[in-house]
Image 1 (cartoon, helix red, strand yellow):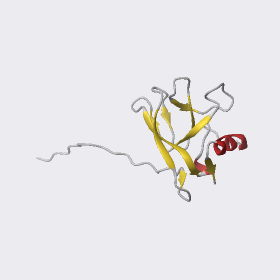
Image 2: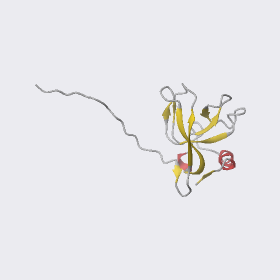
Image 3: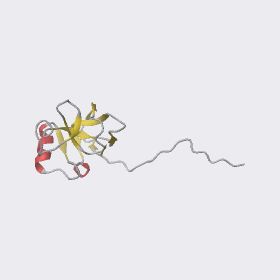
Length: 119
């Protein structure tokens, strides 16, 4: 008699390279607001009024219109509430997002003011 038991399952997705290691990065584990759905790697993030990580919105009101960093790995906020955020260093421009869109020149200037440079 043959058995075909599945004890576990893993999915491997193509990794998004967010950090350019030409300069040592500073990555900080930060509390992420729960139940926002899936947040992807490369998403520019801000802090809400409670100090929790949320997507950056350049047209939003303070404090979500001030970026604090870039999400290094994608997370599902229905399951996780801590994310790794690039707080200082060099990021890969092709990997960055503001919502579903690429960042504008003003978004990149706001990141540079925080010590995050984009190549």
